[in-house]
Image (cartoon, rainbow, N blue to C red; front, side, top):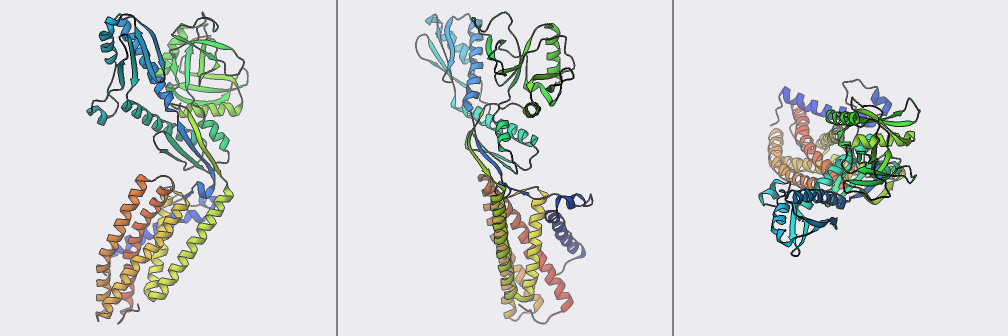
Length: 531
């Protein structure tokens, strides 16, 4: 066990050197990091919200909007199905997330129920499909009244999907701000935790997250006035500029924001006002081109979050799938709209339940406190191990420094975010690393007291301590993994540094110190062990 081949020695040296190189950028300034050779690592640790300051928000997904939109679609499907079956009805409407209607003829109840039940679909989940769960529940309230509601399984699936989609959209919008390492994760069934370290403009973040950014293109109903009777296939929306003008639009959109592939702010060449240039995908470009070709001279409305931001007349067929949105934007407003459109629309509005701003001063205090705690802990451990084990304590201290560099190097390589709990994990790792060395050295001391030779004592000490070290570290590692998967935010940060620290501690405490002891044995040939 004390013999190390050349390739093993080289491998241990390369791993230790890699830890030093990957940790090095963290002590350099940004300018010095940029001047490093291209082959050198340049990734740095990102500081978390509690260290760097920034914005913290807890958002709630308004799942009721998603449910209502689905039930509106169910209402249209029911209307079509009953008309196809020539079943008379009245009062078809959506209220309290349910569709209700009354039949004109009670004797058509059975046919109506069969037609509506036929619209139900299996819930979009393999587990629930096997259980036979359906998306809607049809109830007969009287000999003429029918109530259609969403099943609990479908509701849970849609809320989960809305939260997952919202997290992705929120991440895209925040990435457009140029921030690094935001924390965006679900909390509970319908909430999202957002932490953006280093963001000095929380109001801008609120503005981005507070808009659904649902973009649609609608045909303008030029025949009907907003003050008259509105048919079921049309609806009324106001102008976004606050002028009070109302537009009657066809309910079915020509295109939606889902067909957009790009949106960029710019300036109109004719009016020099700020505009947003957009581009459709292939399918959207074809639909848009065909529509504008057949509706030359007619207006169409560009709707954002239930407000008409522009309603231009079509002067000619618009081919190529690109166009401009104008609406009296400021430069900042055009840039913000472009960000929203590129990121995509939220499936439902987000309500800000909690908002907190951590100042950089508080973060600096946290960093300073963490530094002091780490330094005091490190000095205490180094002094203890050196006084207790002499030369072998020196080997353990060198391995401990390599261990710290490896932890920082791995975290830098992974572009991890360091938080106060993460610092706590590193401090705990320092103690755990020394604990392994204490086990090894005490075993060696016991073997030496039994009269064994130095080589035999060291060999037996390392062999017998290995099992105990692995048992202790594996159980701790399992606990860290559980904390990572079940925990959130700070708990995950602690679990990550602890997990990495366990692996590097075993490597440095058992492998690196054994290599140093092996080299010392070969060179000194001692007759006794100074331990």
